Amino acid sequence: MSLSPLDLGSVRTPVEVADRLSDAIGLGPGDLLVKRDDLLGPGGGGNKIRKLEWTCAEALAVGADTLVTSGAAQSNHARLTAAAGARLGLRVVLVLAGRPDDDAQGNLLLDALFGARVVWAGDVDAPGLRAAADLVLADLRSEGATPFLVPFGGSSPSSVRGYADAGAELAEQVPDVRHVVVALGSGGTMAGLVSTLGAERVLGIHCGAVPDPRSAVAGLLLDRPVARDSLRIRTDQVGTSYGDLAEPAWRAVLLAGRTEGLVLEPTYTGRALAGLVAAVRDGDVRRGERTVLVHTGGLPGLFGHHEARRRLRELARNGG
Image (cartoon, rainbow, N blue to C red; front, side):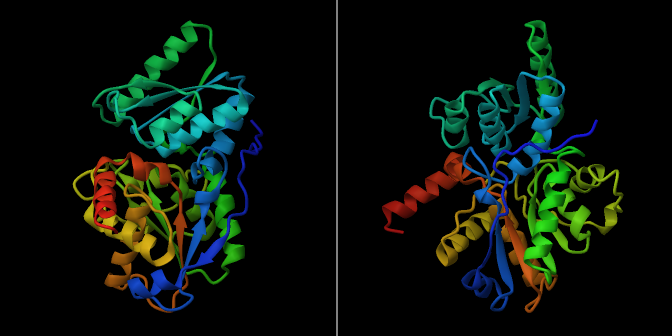
């Protein structure tokens, strides 16, 4: 099936010099830039829009009237799927891990704003979440709907093209880029960048969303095979678990805010910056090497993370 991406607000996002942050982590003037994909599209912005332009095109091509996707309670992908569905006039059902919270925060508030229906799957692992989504799909079909399953994290071989295009865009903006550092969740963003920029230039920081990040990325590159062992992936920033606040990520969130006024969040972008800090410390990224940190968005998740919110309140009480 020949497919063209929809226009959901994906634009050529700016690349900004971050010299104060660069100096703070041990790099030199002009070494560190930030690719502002947090500015993409509707729904509060973020990298998932580049993927949804392809997956939603697939949905419309098969006549779907409902989008179904799954994720964690504070899933940025779920929030942006809800926004994309609202823009396209499609119903959206979000199958989320966990249980209803009387004090909903962050992405959950925006899910409601965009009119998505949330189905809570309870305390389940990834296979359990997929099974819950399959039940929702079956129920919708029995009601006469035509649902389309948007994969976890929006990552599929077709959606990888969104970040293949972003890699080409970045290569034009920063021709001498040596390292592109990005959070690795479901794998599609890293896979797309690798397909265009090559495995040697892309450093993925595993955030704990999938059990085997190498296989996740390699499995999305079947039409452009890349050896698993050639992928540059750091797995040392997860901490105790995906949903918990890892201390290096929290320090990175504060550092970005206090050096550049950048808002990161603890689950993805905070871990990505923490991974870059560790890579500089280890000598994998060196002074004088042009480096781009991809800001994949997720600001609402900062306010949906219970421990991060508690610490921010404490800082506010103490005057910063």
